[in-house]
Image 1 (cartoon, rainbow, N blue to C red):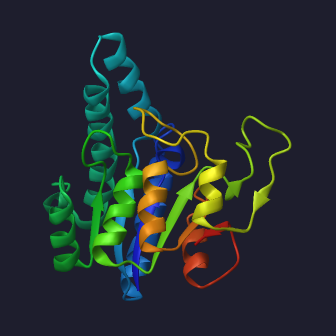
Image 2 (cartoon, rainbow, N blue to C red):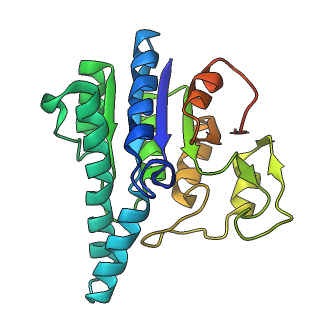
Length: 224
């Protein structure tokens, strides 16, 4: 199975959690042993947003703010990649074609952001589209998709299954801004809806949820 594993920065980088990162490396190795092809897209989390604020206070434009956030996500990806494959894996793909080439060569690729105006959600969606992935698993800081932001609204309810069309109606923002932070980036939704690639949103603080998802267990929220 071709799987895109989107590891949220809200999970492993807010603050950076070396123990959890190592557990994800173990999960990735397990998926490779089970003959899955895995594209891992890592978010920058709180460090990325802090760099965005720094850039903003310096008077830098939104594109420049995005650029430093991308660098933060690539550092997180680099840590995961080197833990997985050693120093030789230090170079993180900076383009979609580089990512696809690495995946073909190794059966796995670890990457962060690609370019301004695009979150790592959108990167994961584009990679999934390019490799014709069977599934995207997004490991985030929530148990799935909710009717409202559960961090803001006590009456938010989790949904077990939702269409991309209905998901679009729940999102607070429908376009990219630097540092956007919601359950799924709107551009990613548009790409996945067009390609009809399934996404499963799970609680990323338990990496075993990734394994459970691939076994077909009913956890998180399936978007299709």
